[in-house]
Image (cartoon, rainbow, N blue to C red; front, side, top):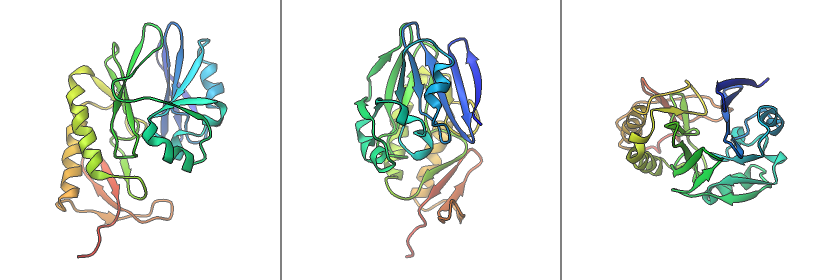
Length: 232
């Protein structure tokens, strides 16, 4: 059962069996960021927290982030994520958002930052005045899925390097998995770890993940689940 935790007077996080999503409220509108893994009633949960008109934005469209999307006719999302969304049964109209776009909830402006790689259209959301970055799966201290279709480790590194250009603008990161919150310094560590995997300098081991067998590269600060390297 989902657990609702109030962060402050106009912000909530919802813990859904290892997945985390958020409700943000402004003076005019509210925004649900992702809709969970086992929460088809995510819209109902969010509407129980705010009386403001509710919109939905997805950081990306992996199945554990869109359980409640069917309750919405439209959702904000990177257009680069449409293939992933449709492949996982998403039917809603996509309202495209790109790097630099700003959603204004009324006295609360949220800026979109593109961080592709985990999925083609992964995004982060900067709560500008609160100095908080909501980063989806891409910045976390758990095991980041980078194996299988639509994952791109070089693009992930490039996306995080671009994200570091904004690092002076936020004081903490709110991830969708793992510890809440994490420090911005984790971004540089993730870049370093991913680069060491790409260069073949990291040691990993095969593990079972839902019947699949990717390679886990575990570092002191986070892990990466990647495709098993081809034999030389």
